Image (cartoon, rainbow, N blue to C red; front, side, top):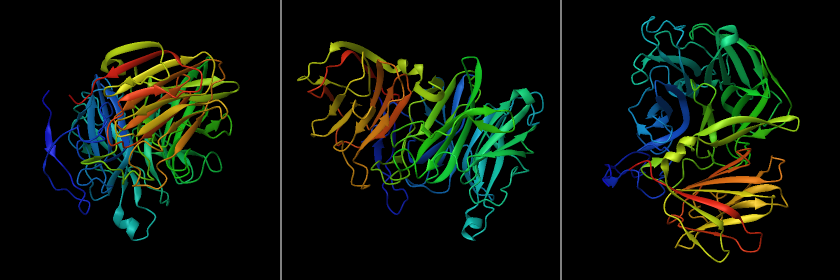
Length: 495
């Protein structure tokens, strides 16, 4: 099949030089996850669905594979699986770099952009002024808006920017906006150091502060970032889920996403308990937020890396990828509510073939070809370990430890780790479900593994860098054998 040709980027003083290279087929390039053709990428931004198209904007620096002056990159998809990278949507300007934010469909024409004839998409984002930051001032992060009248392709920045200035806080960023129908107003939640702040507006231009949440609650090992506030109906009750990323101090010590559940009345968020919960117990999901304008279905997407080593991973001519888009849910376990995440159903479009096994002989290795989905169920929770391996003698382990009551991913021998001293390790994620049986889905790509257990109540995301792709699977001897296993080969999204 034909493949695109691009320029290969070598990391020489952080900038670009070029030679011929086939795009999307370089070593470590993920085949079923979005990544930019070239350059640096981190947080997903402005996730919005409109007129049959999913728009993914993202933190982007096109001129290097390390973080630099932030732009909003842009990719589009008809199904959340096949992505096409579009042109840069927002460039830095006199007000600063374009940091993280969100986008909404202003179907009620509250903003006045486009009059009553064209429905505007409105992006709300942080502008970070590096000059003021360097000067030691505390007013270098403010919120601005831009609008699109052609369905998200071209964007015009509002002449009245910024629309929400910092109240004197150095960390004042990452606005996530949604429509609060009961009071006919927009709600904006943003990160403010060690807490989040809620604002409201009738027109997306003038904002009034409503309340704060988070001081002394949850994990506080680092600065809070990228919040999101999402309503759910659970057993006839309206429960709100508040996502907040933190860096450092996450589930595995680096960057991670925590969450809270509770009640929101349009003014104040009241938590239902004081538990600290993690959206993902692996080290490589951060800054995850949801798409707007998707109705009752809540679709979550995160940056698949970690600030501990994100700028040092051995990939060229790009750095970083996004997680598989996930359907976000909320479930009650005992007296508490827990978030759940499972891969979107559109992943089925990538299935080439599925083979079922009653059980895997413990001395046998199954051959894998390319990205793979593995699904199975345990009648009772018991210890097991699956081993992915390659001809280079490297291996990745994933399984469940009954003694710890925790799932695990072991990347100690999964490939290169010289770029960060703590990279090669084992990570554990506690089992939250209380059911007797266990359902598990594993999604393996060229350099990543995502584990979804108990319908997504425990999720783990890991990246790794093997010298060759993992092409064999076997069950580690010694424990009870797994049964009723389904293995699906998945096609690349880049062909």
